[in-house]
View 1 (tube, rainbow, N blue to C red):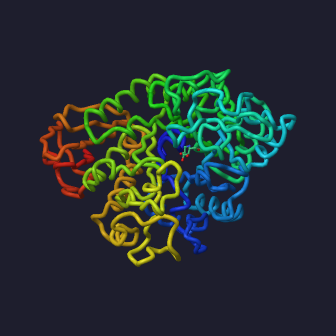
View 2 (view 1 turned 90 degrees about the vertical axis):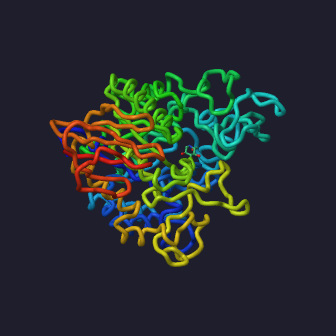
Length: 510
Ligand code: NOJ
C-alpha cells in the first residue's frame, strides 16, 4: 500500500448478495458457507474486501433488510460459527469483510418491536415512532417506499396509535431520538467488531432522524425534506468515534447509503472528517451511458468532495437497481467499457456480484416474483458452471440470468477474452499502480462522446479513454503510450494507436 492512506481508499469492494451467491445446503438459497468456499475465487479475481448484504435473523419480508436479531445469523444462511470461520479465512487471504447494518428500522418481529407494540406503557414504547390519530386518517402524507400509495404509517388496533415505517409495514422505524436506542445500536456495532469485521455498510443512513412533528411534505415518497436532519449528523459522528476508537488498529470503515440524489448533500455526510468514511453517491449510478452526463457527475464529485478531503465511491450496479449492462441497452461492449470507468475513477469502487461475468438482469415471470420492490431481476443466482444446475444443488430461489450456459464462472475463468478476465486484469492493474488507486484525477481534451482523463501519483501516470459512442474516435494523447488494458482486449501490450474503437475503453501506461 502507498503511504499512510487507510486501506479502504485503495480497496475495491465486492458486494455479496448472500441469497444468490452460492448454496451449500441444497435449499436453493445461498449461505455463508457458500461464500467461504469461494474465497479462493474472490482472491483470484483480485478484490480487496467484500460487503455482505444482511444475513441476520429475519422473516425476510425485505430479504434480510428486516432484521429480527441484529446479533445472530439467520438459519437459512448458517450460524455465527460459520460467520467466524468466514471472517478468519477471508483475513487469511487479505480480504476484508464489511457487513450490512440496518439501523433505520428493525423487523416487526424484533423482540424490541414486539415489546414496544404490546402496550402504550411498555418500557420500549418509545423505541419506535408512535403517534396518536384517527384510525381512518394517517398522521401525514408520507408514503412508504416500494409503493406510490401506501402510507408510511400503520394503525395498531390493540393500542390505538400509528407507527411509522419508511419501508414496509413489517419494517417499523426505530426512534433514534431515544438515547436507549442509540446505546443499543452502538452495542450491535461493537458486537460485529468483536466478531472481527472490518466495517459496515450503513443502510439509508440519512433517514435516521425524521423532521419533528411530522409535517406534510411536497414529495411524500422518500423525499429528503422529511429526512436529512442535523440530528442524524450528530448520530453519525457517534458511530464514527465508536469505529475510530475501536482498539486493534483494524481501521474499521463506515460506508453510508445516503440515498439523496444531490452530490452536495451526500458530501455533507462526510462531515469535517468526523462522519462517514465513505458515502454512496447515486447520481452516477442513475446516469445513462452518455459521456457528457458522466462528465458532469464526475465534476460534481470533484467540486463537492475535494474541498472537504472526502474520498468518493463509485457504483454501477447493486441489489436494488437493474444491472448496468441491462440499463445500458444490453450491450456487452458498453458493460466492458463501463468496468474500465468504474475501476479507474478516483475513489473506492464497488463491484456487484455477477457484473464481473457481464450478467444482464434475469427475466422473472410474474409467478416467480418475490420482492415487494420489484428488484428480483438484479438478484438472480450466480451461475458457477455450465451444467444444468450451474453448480447449485437444487433450483435456486430465483430464475437464472440470461445465457447462464456460457456466462458462468467456470467458462469465463477459462476464457482469456471473457468479461471476468477483463475485471481480473483491471483489478491487477489497479493493484500495481498507485496512480490508479490513489492518484489525482484530471480531464484531458477529447471529442464529444468520449471521456478522457489522467491519474497522477508521485510521478506515476495512467491515461484512461472511454468511448461512449458506437463510432471510432481519434483521441490524441501527447507522448508515447502503451495499451495496458483494453475493454475488448484489442492491442493490449502494444503502442497506443491514437484512436479508440466504438464502445471501447483503454487504460494507457507510459
Ligand atoms: C436499502 C437497501 O439497499 C434495500 O435493499 C432495502 O430494501 C432498503 N434500504 C430498506 O432497508
